[in-house]
Image (cartoon, rainbow, N blue to C red; front, side, top):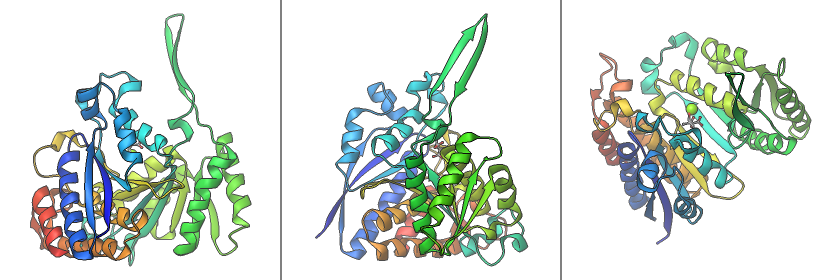
Length: 358
Ligand code: IPM
Ligand code: MG
């Protein structure tokens, strides 16, 4: 039987509990679809700082590189807030994305039909359905640019730099154009070209590449306008491609449209088959250990893992279908509304229910 090697990084806060549910669902899916999964657990973020003094130990990088794919919970928490910038849990996350060359972050915002009532947007704004793919550049821009803090005459100043090279924009644009070709052939590139040089370069590269994809309808929007359009008329979007920081912000916004940030999965990909799969939400330390977190974003990340890294589309579909079915029966607190007809459940029970549907 085919056995896939998955490196699992549970991380901090709710990370361990949501990952446990996702692993349970993956095991059940494997059993039903005729393959096996072998897990290798490694440390990242605050858990790694506690155990090894650094947020991204060498062994973790090696364990990820040796795997077929990587599943991640979430990192960070108040316990490590006093760490210096270079040793924060988040640095571990950025470091692993960079070390694995995962420059393309796919963040699909879809509304599961049973969750229409959980979206804060009015039904007439959501329309028939919602299916947006945010393609976020993940290893460049202001997250990785030159930075520093200086003090002169007793006054401190700090800076971070947004810098993109043409090849960096080209490769993320290629992912986005290819994605658009597989979907509804509409690509919206988001920038701040009315102010930023880096955005003007970004836009020029997109326009140049558009000639290679004559079937794709390309549009450009400023990021402020995009933030507004997402809640005014989200149905206008198919694929959105944008920089690291704008993508971070817009994907949180897009997730809320779908009912809860607890529903959004993501895939981070590079040029090889190796990918890193994680929910887009954070480690939610305030609710950690209480068995109330929503594991569905992590479970849906497993579905993306099966689709994009392991090439097991039928298994991926089975998970999405199971999630959709379970939403009519049960909801965690973040997506539960009075009178929704579903039962209020905790993290573990949600995992059990999804696994049972597979
Ligand atoms: C995300 C997160 C991370 C990011 C943080 C935790 C560093 O917000 O994956 O969206 O900004 O990329
Ligand atoms: Mg974010």
